[in-house]
Length: 110
Image (cartoon, rainbow, N blue to C red; front, side):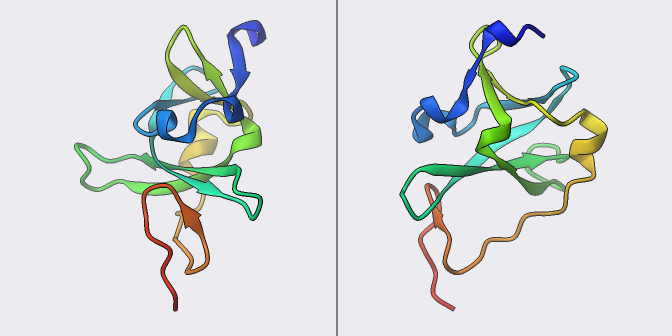
């Protein structure tokens, strides 16, 4: 995969990231963006990626730091630049916390 074909993901509008395919650096599709999390400066900081399920059943969510994700315009996909498919499969499952700011979920107080 050519580095020249990859753009910084943070330049893409957060809403436009939703539903995009996510591929590992080795080119294997690993999931789809389900949500975007924001930092205290209201900038995208992490992507919540649904992986491993079939038609939304049996999968799990993992989080990727947006600094480690690039956009491949040719594939219209986001690339996890530092993870292979096997490494991606070993990421811990993501759980929402009460103080997270998310594009798809309301902030919940616990």
